[in-house]
Image 1 (tube, rainbow, N blue to C red):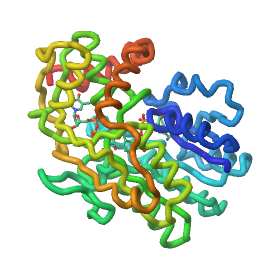
Image 2: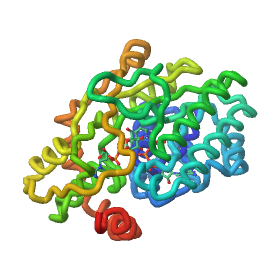
Image 3: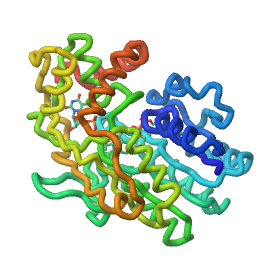
Image 4: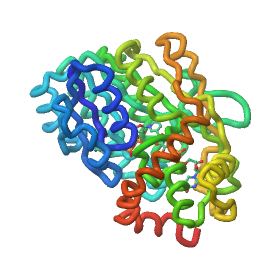
Length: 336
Ligand code: NAD
Ligand code: DAU
């Protein structure tokens, strides 16, 4: 199979490339990535010698670029990771979110229709369902209720994808996953941000009362779920993916500090994120029953391995946080 993976220089996309190229020795993958602030070619160092991986710098919203790749490489399937992915940045300004997440996805769908691709996996998120109270889980039939600009653009892309399936029979499948953690996550996100700050003895900024709940899944388990959906998912269907591992933010931050041997006095409660979703939790029964997927990592093992990875790869995140990230961090956190 020849696959176009978009956003493969980011966190989940790069992990997926390692997964798919190792799992399927005959597959070739073209990786189209715009290299925004979140795209990092260092994530792909381990693929330098792999002739079945081709990197193309470009924008998914650029029809000509995407069309040439699809034709020149006889692409069978698209796995669309490319997105603006950070909720806080979408609150600062959402134009790029609408452009990439909605317009860009539409370009891919349009070309999938014209070139009759065999599969289109739209990598979406549990955030499209909005926020839960203390009880209950998101299922695939939970109504969409996106609350942040980021989530709204992801929901729009999901609806477009489903409409292309309904109207043109494009073999679209959608995955909606909970919060990922693991290697190569950009340090604006909770876990790597807290690890990097703790390592530098800097304050750990916990939003609001710290009691918001997220369900955590190791990125390699998300990748195996996308693999299952790419190969076995039914066109027109949505598959929820979760880790069955709910944690309040404060509980998680305290656990990170404990494993790192750092003091809880580094924790600083800061002004809450506007519109902050209280709780996400996922019912993954459908993918488990229909496609036989189960996560391989327990949270306890996964988080220890992840912390060790960030300790061993300090040069990776130090290079990021010493660049334009500094400016972002100042804008987002100073005086908060
Ligand atoms: P990320 O921000 O780490 O990576 C996004 C990648 O997309 C970057 O390499 C960036 O350069 C690229 N990109 C952005 N705009 C582009 C464009 N116009 N054209 C081509 N490339 C572009 O994001 P991530 O955390 O790896 O998330 C990947 C996908 O998974 C996203 O669609 C996100 O919505 C979804 N998702 C993420 C999580 C999570 O916990 N991180 C959970 C569920 C779903
Ligand atoms: O649920 C899936 C989603 O998970 C993905 O669709 C998004 O792309 C991904 O970014 C993530 O969104 P969140 O907003 O849940 O992740 P983030 O790491 O930004 O925040 C996790 C929780 O931690 C959230 O409740 C906000 C809180 N937080 C975050 C940061 C960055 C803090 O308390 N302090 C912080 O500095």
